[in-house]
Length: 244
Image (cartoon, rainbow, N blue to C red; front, side):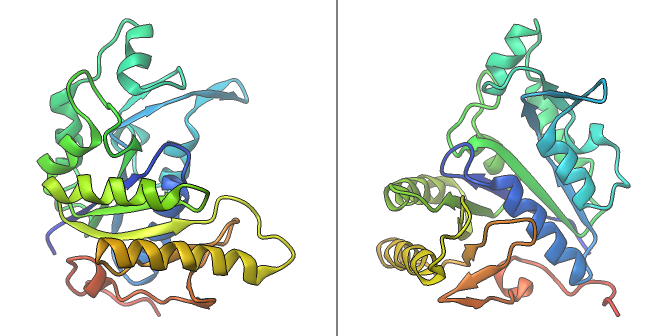
């Protein structure tokens, strides 16, 4: 099977791209696909047990089974929690632009699906000259948009959808629940579904659903769990093996 790339972007930073990417990787692996993860640029280091760690990169590495080198998953890592080109300057470095695409190409033939997770929102800078949009276009990747379910999400989602459609194929949009559900479960799902319905109507698309909050998220629509058909949602062939 030829490696299919899927670019995950967000309406903003902190909307849950990694939360969704980890869930998506788990779903695809459970369906029988060999899955890789690629975070072209990663900024914002933490020191744990005396060693530097990048949470997003570590979560992606764990999601794909812990068998791939971190330098292939997140090859360009910077310490400051800033836009990558700014963080790079603080270290007297520069984001290697040719390596942004080359890092994705390394995965070709090694996995069935490569989940490419951008940094920040669609037009956030990832190097001196490139945004996420530039990289996704160069990779010819279908794009999945993650939008945080909060006040203003309809505007943010519609702006992002319009911009993505100018240059790339929008494969879907997912609303991510950013906080624990209050006591009245229906109020959360109703608000999320109302937002999704409005985005669908105005953008003329079918959303994937809402990803619930927590360590074991589910994709839901109108209160019911959604079981995605990956061969329909993404340009995938059948996996080479089926899980027992």
